[in-house]
Image (cartoon, rainbow, N blue to C red; front, side, top):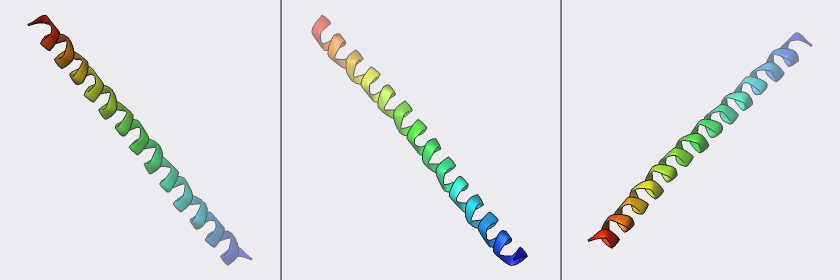
Length: 50
């Protein structure tokens, strides 16, 4: 029984680690998309002002 509990705990840790990495990746992607939209908006507005 203790070996099964250790195995389940290990699987849980790996799963939580994977979820953490996914959440971090989604956050980073969102920030990069926001910066890209800001840059594109600035370029469009700058082009219209010329």
